[in-house]
Length: 286
Image 1 (spheres, helix red, strand yellow):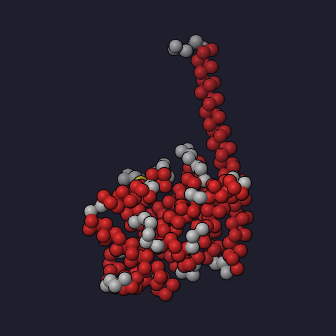
Image 2 (spheres, rainbow, N blue to C red):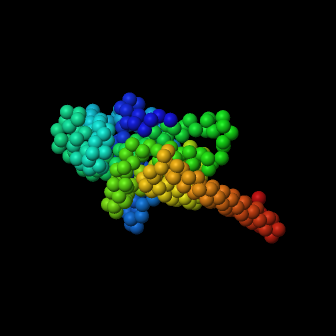
Image 3 (cartoon, one colour):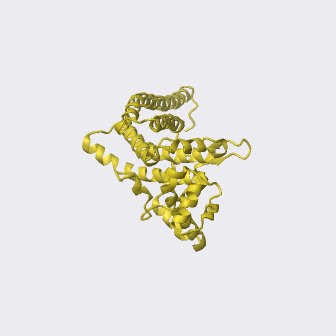
């Protein structure tokens, strides 16, 4: 796995501001009448490929592309100042100054610290996606093909990407928990859940799509809470917690699969039974 710091290199990275705009557009749908916010049925990673983002970037007007590049550069630089200033506008201003820009460049970010947190979160998601793309091959070599082993590995790798900013991450979590930031936090987490389930092989389009993501969100966020309080060597407290919880998760996933299979079987039986009844009553219209 690449070192956590390598995910912020400029070479080969996506334009995260364009990606965030696309993510918030595609991942969320708000009902104009009820105000309810729901996910699209298609996982974001299924149609948001890196090549598609590159094409979108190429199609953007030069001025917009330049502005987006500047924003990404400033936020990437700002991460170096998070240990000193936290997830604040001060960190963004310091990052801009380190690039030779005016400190008032933080005005490019209307959401301030939320933009910085989102940039880091989506960068970690991107690194995890690259990692998971190689996991099936390694698992096959080890003879580990279980879904629970894959989920455990994915969550642990994603959690460890926070390690460079572990001390200040509770501040970021608190900011994203505010009601005004909930839609963005929801979309960021939703993208992470879609990535993990997509590479785990899930292509469900029934109610299990929601239950699986709810269960995974609970597992990930509870592990994240343990991690930010973990001061043990090699984060053993976190891994032990995850190992315990993954057993319950595996049981839940198995139960969900059985319910989905039972529902499908019941539907087939009902259709078959109705057709038989029509034949018995002479209602077949052939």
